[in-house]
Length: 188
Image (cartoon, rainbow, N blue to C red):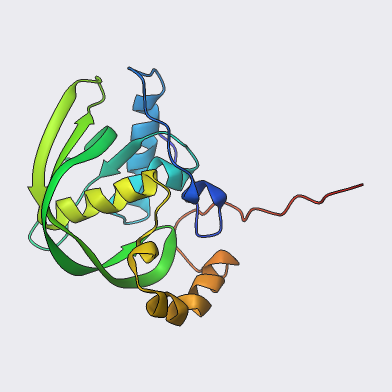
């Protein structure tokens, strides 16, 4: 297994929509293992492929150690999609792609998610609480959406200084991050 660098705010891949898997893929198992290893090394609870530079619709989740969860079998979802939802609730969120930034985000209280497992078998999961929140956060990534996009304009303006620091690579984290993108010099 390999630890992959995590892409932070400012990398264009975080704003792109990931492509769905069309069927079983010979590389997906290795990608899932690497993503889980990367997420655990960074002390995260979820990770989307965009965050490690891959534009495929795969997320990994392990909420072990979150409030009230002593043990959780890691979950890998291919092509996850919210089929139904109900209720709303706010809770503070963070993101490995936005180091040292946390804010309150409103999400659906309960969701029903359709997805494919690693064998490409169809599955449906009904959940809420922390698992539901993490799944919604990671599925947002697959659509090029960051949790800060759920914040109001005023709140985003108040965070601008911290967001600029992240975008400029001025972060101190215990995990590998992808090097900053450099603008392409145009020559005539």
